[in-house]
Image (cartoon, rainbow, N blue to C red; front, top):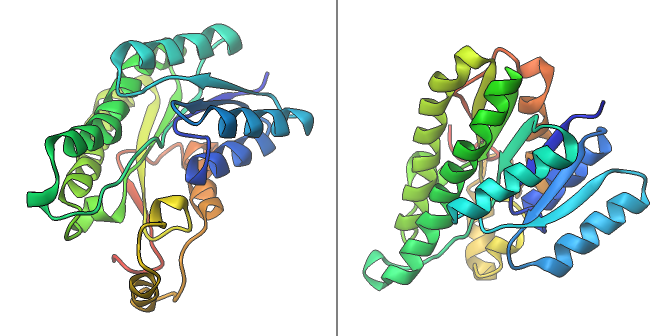
Length: 244
C-alpha cells in the first residue's frame, strides 16, 4: 500500500517540486492550495496523467477548521497520513515601521499559525498509527534574521522552535519532526528582488549560485524516508554555505 504525503502550499515553487518528487517515489500526494486553483489543478492533472496518484485540496491552513478538514479528507481518502510537509508561506520585504498590521498578521497566520494548525490536526492520526514524519519549511532567515524582513524572520524562527518542541512531544509515539531551512532558492518569492541586488546576493553565497526547488524537495524526501528514522528535532540548512 502506497504511503501518503500532504504538501501544503504545493501549487508552485518548493511545494510543487516536493509534490512531484514524492509522487515520483510512489506516494499518494495531496496538493494543498488556497488561492492558486489553476496551478494546483494543472499540477495534479499532469501527475495523474503520468500514472501517479494525486489530489488537490483547497484549504487555508491559517484557519484551524480548514487545516482539520485537510487532514480529515486526506485520511478518509487514503487511510492515513504518513508525511506532512508544512511548506505554505508568504514573505514581505519592508522596514518594520513600514510593515502594517495586515501584512504582519498575514505572515504570522500563514507561516507560523498554519504550521501549528496542521501539526495539531495531524497529530491524532499519526499517534494512532504510531508513525509519521513531519517536515516544516523554515528559512535561513529564521536562523539568523534578515534586515527588512523582521516579521518573516520571526515567523520562520517560530517554526524552528515549534519543530524542536513538537519533536520532543511526539518522539515517544514514533513520529519524527524536522525542519528544512532553505537559503536563496529560484522561486517566484524572489521576483520582487531587484536584479542588481539579487546578483550581489548570489556573489556572497560560497557555492556561487541560487538553489533549486528540487534540491529542497530531495532534502525533504530524505527526512521523510526510513534512512532518517533516527533524526528528529533538527534543522537542515540548504543555503549554499551562506549560513554556517
